[in-house]
Length: 115
Length: 115
Image (cartoon, rainbow over all chains, first blue to last red; front, side):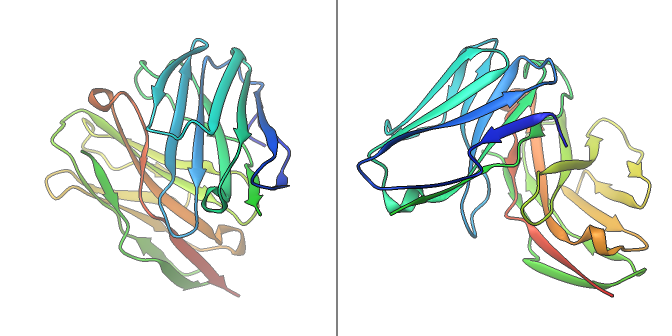
């Protein structure tokens, strides 16, 4: 596929649970992204990491906590979520976003359902 | 703020025919990129075609071509000789360096291909 993998592909969790989403890229990129894709809404950028530093936090609630331990891995830690957080969470990677014209490559997403 | 609008929630096309998807955007920048992404059902989002705003020539990738009208801020996608595998959600996206190279997506157009 695109060289970006995400696990798990599906996740059902209660509002009091703590879970983590994982993303891994095998493309040698140094920027990684989390997006939220809800039904009937445009994709929303949540976080951007460049060279393992968070460079963007798009007013995301603190119940979502990203972690980027190295340039190949990105996590999204979840706790005390709400039912409206149910969505498809997409990870993407690219070369340094400050460069010109670098495309983002997307993973298959994690379908999250909060009960 | 930049916005991207896709006015057609769903388009249907007969196999081997041509379909055109519309996209308009709003920006005050002169240097930016436009993209069309394809998201098949339960599969990864992949880049279909990209256009640099400074290039007057419309981008083409095999059966996919764009009509880029910079003054009108319009960026339509034409799919020629439609195939069953073209059935997917198609997202128009915008990126500019002034906006931190973040991708801004439209709401998407679902393309149905009839055999």
